[in-house]
Image (tube, rainbow, N blue to C red; front, top):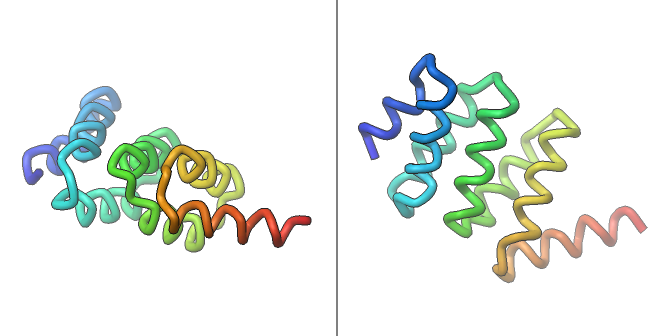
Amino acid sequence: VEALSKAARDRDPETRRAAIQGLGISGEGAQKQLRALYKEFQDPDDKQEVARAFMVQGDAKSLIDLFRSERDPAMKRVHLQQLTLIDEPEANRFLLDILGDEQ
């Protein structure tokens, strides 16, 4: 996880994205690193890759937290899209709450 976390901060976008994908399949130990990376990143593509990594992990809680703290509407949509792919009760409840607010 440490080596992937370091590679995720590389200047090369392909290296960064490959490292983020690696963190996504590294399990729960990578969640703290992914959260830190999301806060550091400015590039929306990198942030999207982190959201995808959380989806791969089935980490609804992190995606919900990111959604709640995100100010960019486009990134909020990305988080919602990733949540729709997670079959977890927490994700389903959150999505139903969001849909209920918009009706």
